[in-house]
Amino acid sequence: MIIKKVSFTLFFTIVLSSSFLAQNVIDSACIHTKIYSLASTEMQGREAGTLGGDIAKNYILDFLKSVKADKNTYLQTVPLVQIYNGKCYFFNKKDTLKENIDFYIAQKKTAKLLPLELKNNKIILLEFSTNWKNNLNKFKGKWIQFSFSDKRDKRIEELIQQKEYFIQNGILGLIISIPIETQSTFFSESKKTYLSQDLSYENFPVILINNNRFEQFLKRNKKISFTHKNTQFVNGFNIYTIFPGIKSTGNKTVLSAHYDHLGSNQRGVYYGADDNASGTAALMCIAHQIKKLENTAQQNEEDIVIAWWTAEEKGLLGSSYFTQNPPFDIQKINAVINVDMIGRYDTNYNPPNNYIYVIGSNFISNQLHLINEEVNNNGEKLILDYIYNLYDHPEDLFQRSDQYNFHLQGIPSIFFFSGFHSDYHTIYDTPDKIDAKKASKIASHIYNLTLNLSKTKNQIVR
Image 1 (cartoon, rainbow, N blue to C red):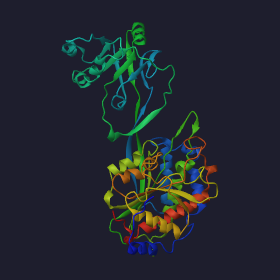
Image 2 (cartoon, rainbow, N blue to C red; image 1 turned 60 degrees about the vertical axis):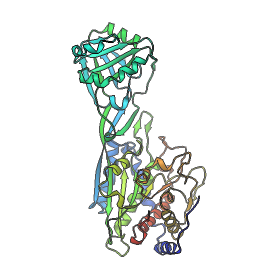
Image 3 (cartoon, rainbow, N blue to C red; image 1 turned 90 degrees about the vertical axis):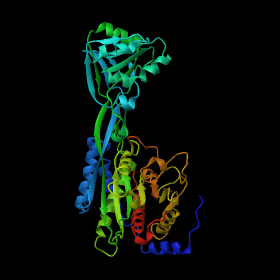
Image 4 (cartoon, rainbow, N blue to C red; image 1 turned 135 degrees about the vertical axis):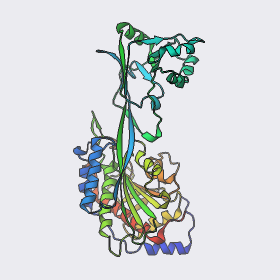
């Protein structure tokens, strides 16, 4: 890794500002207790937009209230849309055709958003000819169907592109019956989650259906219904609390972690003890310590924001929403410190090594890298491993956690991570496997770094 040269004055400033750092100030018992709570069965895997996610949110809020850090604590509602697979049906009583088994819906991001139930007595079969458009006014409030013998027929795409024209003429849906292969089995509970603001909304289904199965279904049933239940609109919640600085100029150091995980399914509960109950717990304990400094000589000079993001596991959605809809001037953020998975060991290190992977500290500002090094040298003396500190690393780790959204805004960011293990994203990531002492040393370093970056003279030069 190439480190830019720094002036003696800057280096001397960093050394001075890093003195008197307390070692191991974050108690391992605090982290241990909170990880066991966050990764309990009660939390149901903390999936964003679910009851378990709300229970986790309330747990964090209750803790902040208990340590009197709730005065400047805020919730940011994050509107989400969950798009399920296999939730659409053509049906008549017990006779059904199922999505992904008998048919597919084209353009899933747009055509599967609004829950609706469309009923009609007749589907109009049209021949693809030069004058079919002239008859559309007769079919208002109906579905229209076109049948093709070759799934590669170029006219199929032409029809799909006419969607807006169909909508303008009051057509309810477009069915294209073709000889497509479908699946005999399908896991219907799989879903993807998006930010509502990032999607366009419409309720016009474009359906590609197996022609033989559809023909037999129409022969069996004179009246049919179509139900469209793929989509669920839910809310996630970002939590952030602001610790005002005694010399505040409005600049803010943001310390963050995501508190959501994968929820539960028929396999069991995805406890997410390391991912990311460990980071969530660390920030809770750090918040308590920063609150204790209020009205003392050690209180932070500039503002500190501690934030817990929702929907990281869905694609960094909570932090993305925050950066797109910031509650304060995002360019006043001095630096972002993000914490994700700090409670386990990967195959590169054996217990009880006190190491941490550091990623991104020099991507925008070399000053952030140097401050982190000096804080560590004068404090916890962790092994700072830079093996993943490449923007184009094959694992893309920097792009896979929440600091990345701030980096895209030009904000210096540093990511702390302990590495992958065999229980990653499985139901076996349980709290009994966490090394709370190791996590507490990492949390203590992060606490010291956060306070150091909140000093007025340590505002990052971009």
